[in-house]
Amino acid sequence: METRKYETDVLIIGGGSAGTMAAIKAKQADPTIDVLVLDKADIRRSGAIAMGMDGLNNAILPGRATPEEYVLEITEANDGIVNQKALLRQAEECYDVIKELDSWGVDFEKDETGEFVVHRVHRKGRYVLPMPYASDLKKILAKQVKKHKCRVVNRVMATRLLTNGNRVIGALGLDVFTGDFVIVKAKAVVVTAGAAGRMGLTDSGYLYGTYENPTNTGEGFAMAYHAGAELTGIECYQINPTMKDYNGPACAYVAGPYGGYTANTQGDRVTGCDYWSGDLIMRMWELSNKGEWPVYLKMDHLDEEVISKIEGILHLNERPSRDRFHAGRNQDYRKHMVELHISEPGLCSGHSASGVFVNHEAETTLEGLYAAGDMACVPHQYLLGAMTFGKIAGTNAAKYVKTVASMEPDEIQIEKERERIYAPLKNPNGVPHNQVEYKVRRTVTQYMMPPKNKDKFDIALARFQHLREEDLPMIGARDPHELGRALEVHTILDCAEMMAKASLFRKESRWGFYHYFLDYPEKDDKNWKKRVNIKKGENGEMNIFTRELEPYIIQPEVAVK
Image: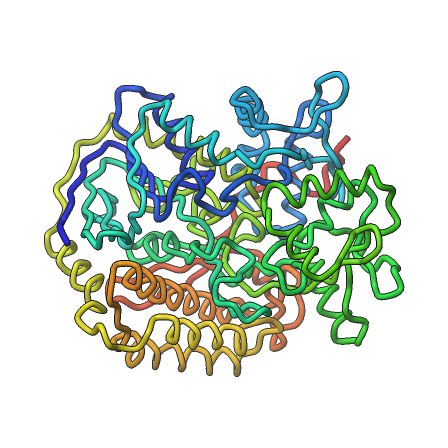
């Protein structure tokens, strides 16, 4: 195992949709700078989408919707805890991203005149732009990264950010194939490492059968936290409607525009709107507790042409194993309804509101550090928001590096992280990583899944402390792959502790089921319509505090045409 050193102007950590777009846009902003992408996997098939996606959920197209409509929609969907300037930025700039993707060959649904087709799934506006045959989206993005002459280092798992005072100056990591220790010196860093998706246990029982891409274990959240950046909304969980026993979305929001809907056993509609939100999950939880369960995705009333179109969208892009799953159970949309369930909890701004605290320029609270995608708090941003804020982050990072000089990293930081990374290799016959991970995630599921209460969280925090002191030091690893998995357990535990402490701090209920707190069952706008932020203190303790909301620029009571 060797030590490899790199130096660059802009370092991108994570090669998913936000990271590839950040790299492309940094180079477009200034072709003379050096851009380096570190990816834990391979950028051709990495990140939350891996292949493609069934559609863009928040496409604001001229003449179909207005940016102001969208800002009000998400303000309402996220119970008012938003930075409207960031929402407006996404809404105003996403159409240019769509047009560029279209020019690169991404396949969007269009009408007979060649205009983009959009559907309504949200409570008000029409924002859903289908991508029926976009299974090569990640390959297209990776090709553009190469075309723009960005450097890519695959199979490197970033573990910590390098800092000098309040400035981020690089990162450290592990090559999960060779075991090499990686040091990167950079003038600016853009973190796009995705959601924290491996938090609770899955209903299927498989550790990696999560709704989110199971390689997205929250490294971005943990790296930002340990570097001293603020995080926000960590008490606002991501919990999604999924297919029973399958790690994929229920997709009523995909089938909805074509006539599908969420139904009870008798086939009657049970939700007013299938747009993903805490209110939708609350409705599903209430039905379960009343015994009106299971619920289903109903499409058997639709005609053959429509069902074939839905199958084309759902089975070929985001989850290409979906058709084989149905075939194994002898299920056919034409004859059967699809049983639904509720996913495990996680952290993700793409579907809820938890992430690194950023402004409308993708800037964090640390100089030289930008964040985008599922780990940056721009609520309900989905895939298109990830790419739009990847664009913003990469562009701004390219400008920033022209104003600063490189700084040498601190050898003490480097050696401390080197020791932490390789500790499990000194104990090859120690406790397997998956056993400790199971204990952490079982605690999350049993004591932190809503409805929340103080007693459960007190137990969870006590168990986390025991796991940190007793179990983590006993983890062993025999090769680089197991070493990477062992480090993921550290990250999962960091994120779980943040989830528990932030949940206890917000003494109200908000976001429907996402933060349904039995000790404080009502929403309290007077005292809690504000942010709950987390930051690592100089003493190493987790500091939790409130921040007032950024002033609204579009008031909810303003009528929108």
